[in-house]
Image 1 (spheres, rainbow, N blue to C red):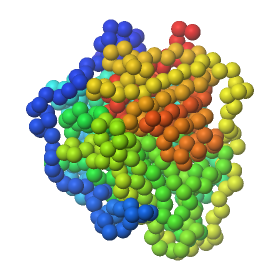
Image 2 (image 1 turned 45 degrees about the vertical axis):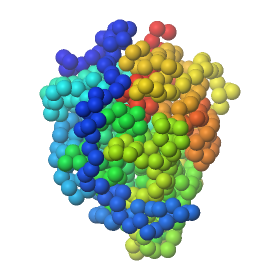
Image 3 (image 1 turned 90 degrees about the vertical axis):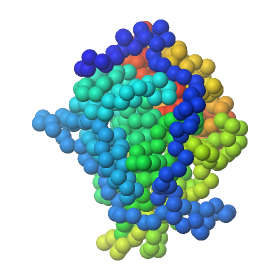
Image 4 (image 1 turned 135 degrees about the vertical axis):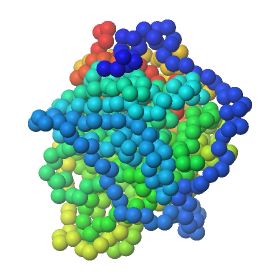
Length: 541
């Protein structure tokens, strides 16, 4: 364990003194003067603008790129059955990004980071070392940029050391040895790992520190389908580096890049055979960009969400993913041979009054800080090859254990109301700033709670709770397709979109583990400016 690691007892003591972090509410004038105002526009938003989608909506069509590449698998150095052991190193690496070299922050020098695969019941050991370059000074929020840690987003594992405890810090050269028991983690889940170093998590995540976590399923009806992992990530590169979080607008709005990628590639191509069904596991790994996904001329069949596989396929024409959300879908090649585009349809995540910006407007002069897009964008190009030997059929059933819970039939131990807010350059939950006095919940293990998360702000907020996935009971406001979908299917969600001016009510099972977990907005810039609370599970009960 690193000598610099902050353990739970130390962190709780620091919180009681209001010393959990440092922050400033404005930048000095010099920082504004140093903002980048030019540079290469990434290919992800370039391309032909002559085509239109729907009623006069323009679509950006970057040139079709290389064949889709799967992220590299992490090497298992474990030697015992049931043990997966991985060496993971945070370090800077120069990689090809959109055809040009760029210095990114990476795991093991890869972008995205290596995919870690386990089977349910495995013990996973991650030997994590910080090799990020030591950088003098602090970021605009007052935090050291070169310290880091690791979070397993979505995993139902202990929030205590040495598992998913996220309030430790590693300096350059220090290591932490994580160990996770996956026996309580549902099979068939796509989760991911990323930095959770409060105050700099957004900058490190933006610059490349993210990788997939997959717990394999043994659902026989899915074994025959060719499977692909699709990690959606955007970046803006200037002078060979990701655009810096150099001003408060970057933290208030969240960063959106001008280059949008799938597995680090701009508009890759993927082939199917006519009659074939493929399985796509999709992760929104962007800081603040929302993806309203649609495959040209096709239905998507939703079979899984954040917390695992569903009972059956659900046909949808569009799927909205806010930052941190994941979906598992089947795609059936049942149209005419040719090319079909996986697109992000227009979606504005900020209203007319939100943060002083118009709905869908760009942040003038502030590269990277965005509010959503009124432009559609091609993410990947799909083409049909020869016909499959025999047309594949959609399974009628996926996971019979998936079911919607009835809160009226359950003992509800607590009703909670959380209000997400922003003002004066800070983020709040129930009016409390994490860096001053975190809003804190104490729950009893083995119970159920009903949480209502309200968002009176003018910007959408994806709400993420650690450890325990929940079931959405209702969504008011926002995208009607999103609201109706998650209010009726037996989905488990650890990240849910709380629309501007709306709310989400969800049933939260408090299961299995005790310890100190977190809940926060997964526009990580908002977490860094204070929109995070503490969830004590089974502590003091």
